Image (cartoon, rainbow, N blue to C red; front, side, top):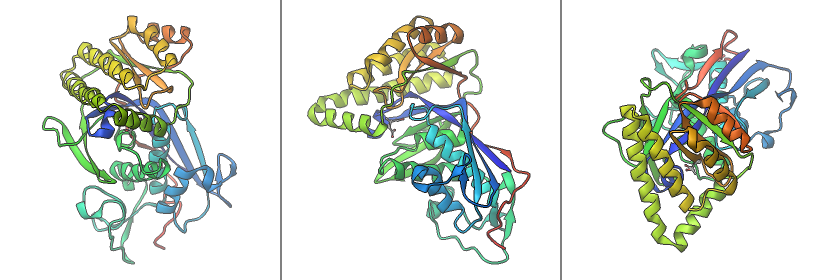
Length: 364
Ligand code: MEV
């Protein structure tokens, strides 16, 4: 068996505004999705026959990484509720791409890759022209897996599944873990990872080290309401068309995000919390909150440093930054929400089991 896992994510600052080029910040959360693979007589997913149309993310990755390979039994497990704004589909795609890569290994030319997807080679992003020859060697198991490749493949798959509209926020956070900042320009004080481009929009992707931050938790409260991201993004676009002056709110979210990033880097969690609550008021004024989110946010506020909706809004989840996770969680549950507790900035994609790798040697 080969198994890999990846964390979900929470957006701390900048959702919606990031679509218009403003900076945004997400952290990986403790809740994860796992994908395990084993050779099988026919294609199975969680014990059932595999129907590609029911699993578009897995199917798209299968086409890219397992074309012509033998049938697999795929098992998906996880603690991230689907369609809740916590990145369950990105975490699943990152884990699946890591498991598939691990299960087939990577063809190598000496120390260099002979095939794959990487932003490290500017001319070879996505389907770069790799020169794979008979005689190239194979790198096995976990050593063949690369976070950047998982992030690229996941962004491509998410964009496909969302009709072409997806920022790389979820894919990069679920692959690299920690704290990820997107911006329309390279930010001087942050650790720049790479650029991502889709449909003429370019995002600069950065990592922020939060290793010095402890003693605070995120309590995630779910309304249980399913609100598709694409609808919420379209709602904001139509508001901005009808009331162009609302672009001021979008720009102000960008200013608040920058303040939040500076506070995070200084480890000043009181200021981080204040910026989160301010960000929420701005999200409310562009119409993406809802009464159920407001109820949970009001309940969490007295025991928290900051509270806001997270993700697309209209339902889904809110987050509270708190030093009293038990109290905050109880307050949210009493107000009717389901809660998860996470530290900030969990570990990214991991190969959990690679002893049987490779399950397929595409080079034989
Ligand atoms: C959704 O998790 C975040 C949005 O900003 C959409 C996006 O960034 O693609 C609403």
